Amino acid sequence: MGQFVIVTFKPKAGKEEVLKKIVLDHVPTLQGIGLATSRPAYIMKSKNGTIVEVFEWVSAEAIAEAHGHPVVLEMWKKFEAVCEYKPLNEIDECKEMFPGFEPLN
Image 1 (cartoon, rainbow, N blue to C red):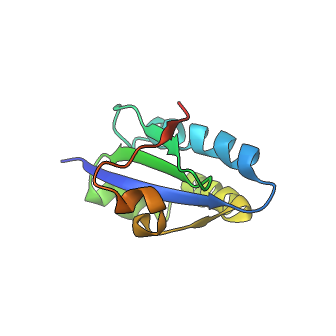
Image 2 (cartoon, rainbow, N blue to C red; image 1 turned 30 degrees about the vertical axis):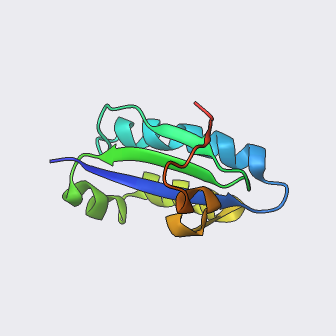
Image 3 (cartoon, one colour; image 1 turned 60 degrees about the horizontal axis):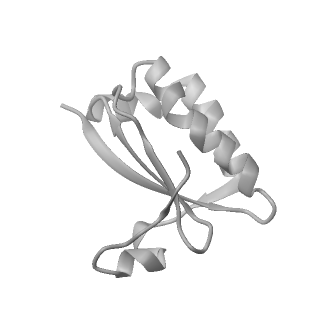
């Protein structure tokens, strides 16, 4: 059974466009190696520039496999160079009853 996740990426100063490109390739890369389902990812931006991504892993096992997969590890290095991962509750919109975000895809 699949597992949906919500990931937030806070760009480092001056890295917004690079981060956006990496995020747009993120799920297609995972799909290409069989770790994410064929459902499309939803990618959006908060008012403070944090990118929010919602996607579906194939399974909990796929998540575990990702932590040792060389393609995923290389991709995660790219993320770490341009952003910080943040908890969802640190985004101001998420404190609202019905948070709204700017679509990026």
